[in-house]
Length: 148
View: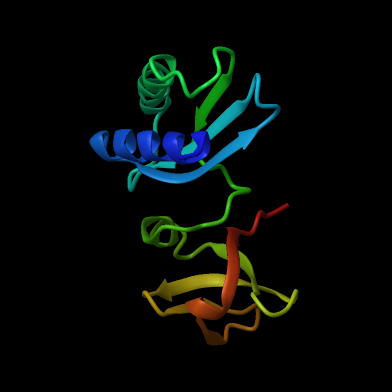
């Protein structure tokens, strides 16, 4: 098992214990001093205290495991606005907000207000006020559209 897989298993278990969702995990840098970036969230939003608690628990697990290097950096945070929406609770929090997405087979962006969703479809209201349905299976990344 790779160190990434091992870290993912550790982090998923700890997130579950704390009633959090692991949204993303990235490993960057070189093998002798990697940067582990953990992005977690919850239905109510993740607090700084929860990030700190999760960070300490992950660090404790890494420090006792010889498969991980002695020197590393660990960043635990919320996903932020630039990360794709992946969990249904994230979509639920975005109802009424503008989102943007592309289709897996093309680079064309769709921008609109998220009206509703289910496991198969997104219902989007375009700028003309017309509601359109999109199959989730054909959609690539969905992100919050930042207003400037």
